[in-house]
Length: 129
Image (cartoon, rainbow, N blue to C red):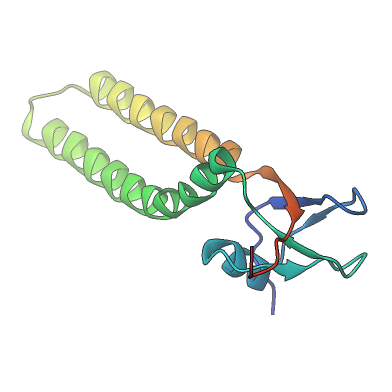
């Protein structure tokens, strides 16, 4: 069974190693729960508000890929039907299809770029603080 990774990496504040975060570590970050580093076994958490906001924005990117593919399929079908009934000629239909596909792949590139990030994980504070 293969596992799809988001490309989210974490940099440990203790040992300064960068590693790809596992799904359980991403879940711990999402619920603000500290976890241990795989390398040095020290407790880490994400505390930077800017990085937390960027990490939370990954949630909305998951639905964006699906909705973009549905929109592209709909636009391609509409262009094909318009060409069939005579509202567009073949070159206009081809141009519209190519523009829609270009926008779709540009959007996928943007989403792929946004999903790859390195989070700076800081030492976890004790629960009493």
